[in-house]
Image (cartoon, rainbow, N blue to C red):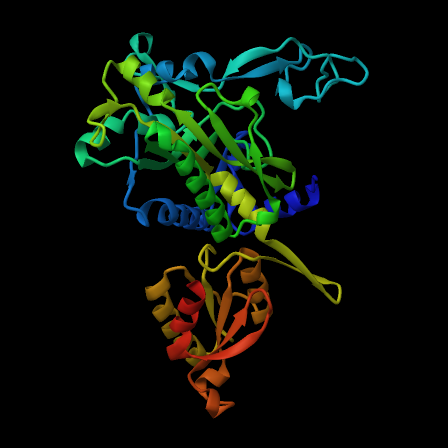
Length: 448
């Protein structure tokens, strides 16, 4: 079910508070591109590090790579992207607007036809549109070679399969992982950062013995679901879709899509595909380099099969924002806030002197800030406006705790509270006194 109001609120907050800006905004923008501000970068980094910990650093069978964005064009010819990576495009003969055919509903007035969403003209016949960005490599353009900005990160792992085997001698099963940018010339980018022309992926290619694929597929599926919940995605909005055999990609024998109820409707969030030996076999033929594995048990060479969990960083950001956005109304006043888990929140805590014109408060607050900043990093200083406005601002960016140094901290009003601070909880608004020496332990206990 669509909720345009929620989408507008999320997008407005994202810009206002420095999460996400329109790309090239002062020049009128560029469709399908978005710039991440300081809080957006921090959120993305926390998501990526959480993924890295769950799927790479906590395991002893994973190898992370960072392959080049530009690759030999034969890679994409072999993978089928040059000839087959396309979407059906329809164009209006009158106003020249273009659409993906499957995103325009059939006309009620003209059955079997599709009408332009802008001017109402009948759209032309569909034609295939390759979504890869092409560019030239070389000093002189007329003799330069055509290369492509990669449309996915997976190929960079397949072409490095032999390098990893030769360098590290892993035993099956093992996986290769990569976080990186990919580029697709989307016909109609839309829905904020959901469908864009430049995006970031977190992908794994997990190599297994052919007869063991099912058990590893099930294990990775469970791990994906665990990670979504750990991240803070609303699991009631997550749905598993078993892709029908007739809809499977040519390389896939089984695919499960994880869909999410975004404000603009239910759409794909992540995917898990069993790609058989399609990729290694194809690149072995295309490169004339043997991409096989010497199995110690059978004493024979095999071409491993592949299971691919695929995650979009930008879609993770959007699903998380849609999951944690909350509003609370009291006496006609609406407070909006982001209920990030502390481990994912861009800012862990904000430190404030109650009054910024009282040197004793400021000095004490700076000391507390220095201690927390050195240990946790994700700590901000906030002395702008009155304390109520600071709370609202920190709530809106999802900061779990505001730490205030007040006159009790100095022991001026209540000697029993000397060297304690006020810690205010984002979700409940409850305030408690915590000794300065115990603040770090207070935060650590809640992070774990």
